Amino acid sequence: MTASRIHDLALIIEDLDACGRLARVTSEVDLAHDLAGIAAELEGGPRAVLFEKVKGHAAPVFTGLYWSRDVLAELLGRPERALPGYVAQCIRNWQQRPMDPVVVADGPVREVTEAEVDLAKLPIPIHALKDGGPYFDAGVVVARDPDTGVRNASIQRFMVQDRDTLHVNIDAGRHLELYLNKASAKGRSLPFTLNLGVGPGLHFAAATPAEAAPADTDELGIASEFHGAPLELVRGDCSDVELVAHAMYALECEMIPGELGEEGPFAEVTGYYARREPRPVVHVRRLHRRRNPVFQTIISGKEVWNSVGLLGEANVLALVSRQVPGVKDVYFTHGGCGFYHAVVAMQQKRAGWSKQAILATFAAFPPLKMVTVVDDDVDIRSASDVEWAMATRLDPKHGIVVIERAFGHGLNPSFPDYVGAKVGFDCCRAFPFRYEHDRAAYKKVPLAGVAIATKPIVTRAAASPAATGDAPKASGGQAM
Image 1 (cartoon, helix red, strand yellow):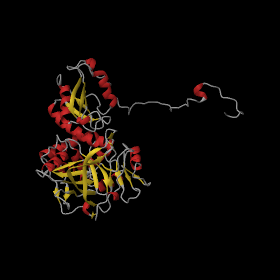
Image 2 (cartoon, rainbow, N blue to C red):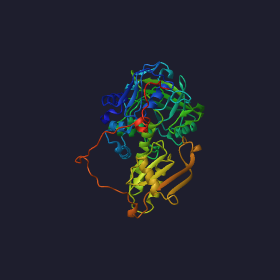
Image 3 (cartoon, one colour):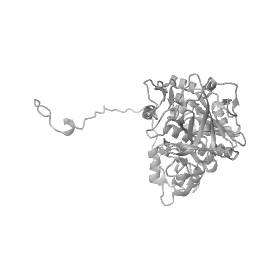
C-alpha cells in the first residue's frame, strides 16, 4: 500500500481486502456485547475485521486496524521491527520542518449533514459486559487553544448519554484539559470536533506524547508527515474548529466548563474497568458523515498496546538515545498494556549508564511504571529472553531502582490520583565485562546443505492398550 492512501479509511479497507488482511463478518451481529465479543476472539490476528451486517443499522463497523504490527507494517511499507524508528523519524521530521494541514473547500465527510443530531442512528457498540453504555473510543478530537488558536489532536473515550449528549473522560495532563481550563477562565465554552473513522497518520498524531509535541505546536502536521501530503480539513458550521475532510463521521461538539455527568464504567487498556465518576458533559451540535460511512471502534487491548506503545517506543528511543550513549532499541510490552513497562536494549559504554537509561526512560514517557534495561544481546520482544536476563544478570541489591510518589497514569489502579511508585531493573552485565558473563554462542551453520533423516512422529493415545501395557479384553460382553 502506498503512503498516499493511508489518509482515507475507505481506501485502507479496500487495500487490506486486496492483500488478504481483511476478515468480513457476514452474520448479523448485535451492538450490545456481541460485536465486541466476536472481535475479542479475533483480537491480535493477522487481519482487521469488517462487520458487514449490524443489527438495526445500515453502516458496517470496522475494527482491528492496530491489533497486529504486521498489518501496520504493511500499511506503512516498513518492516515490523523498523516501525519505532520510522515513527520517530516522522516525528523528528515534523519537529524540524513542520508540514501544516490545509483547509479545503469541501471533503467526503460533508457529503451528508444530518437535519438533527441523533446518535442512536450510529452503530456505536457496547463493548465489555459492565460498560456503562455505548462508547466512541477511536475518534480523534480536534480542538483549538482558547488563547493562541493552536490546534491539538487527542483520543478520549466518550460515553453516549442520549441522542445528542456525551460524557467524556479526559486524561489528566492532556492538552484538552488545559484548553477546557483556559476556556473556563475566560467564561467561555470549548468547541471541538470529534472525527470518526480516520487513518493511522492522524491516529498517531493524536497519540504522540506531549514531550514530543508541546502545547504551542499544531500536531496535526504529524499526520501530514505520515501521509506525505498536507492533512486536509474542512470548515464546520458551529465554530472555527475544522473537521477532518476524509473522516467517516465528524461531530461538532461543545463543552461548557463545570457541567458534569456520570461517565463509566469502561473496560480500559489495563484490563480493568475505569470507575464511574462525574466527568465533563459534551453537547453534540451537528453531525456530518459520508454518504456510505464505516464506523470504526477499538477493543481496549492489543490495538491500544500497539498503537500507543509504538508512539511511546518512538519517543523514548528518540529522546533516550540522545541522552544515554549505547541505547539501541525500546519495546513497550503487551503485558505492560503498551503504557506501563518499557524494555530498553543498550550496548554499555561505561559503568552506571544502564541506570541512567532507566531514569531517562521514565522522564521520556511519564505513564511508565516499570523499566527494564538489558544488554543488546537480549531479544527485548521475547518475554522469556528478558526473563533470562533478569534471572541471571540482575543484582537485586544494587540493580533495582525504586522511585516513590511519582506521577503516572491514572487508569493504572496502582496509581490512585495519578501518583504511585515506579521501579527500574538493571539487568545488564557488570561493566567492565568478564567472559563468564558472556552469552554462550554457537557457530551459525545453514541447514540447506545438511542431510537429515527423520521418521514420522507417531502420537499414541495415553489410554490406549499400547500406551498402558494392558492386554486387550475379550470381546462379546457389553461395554460398561
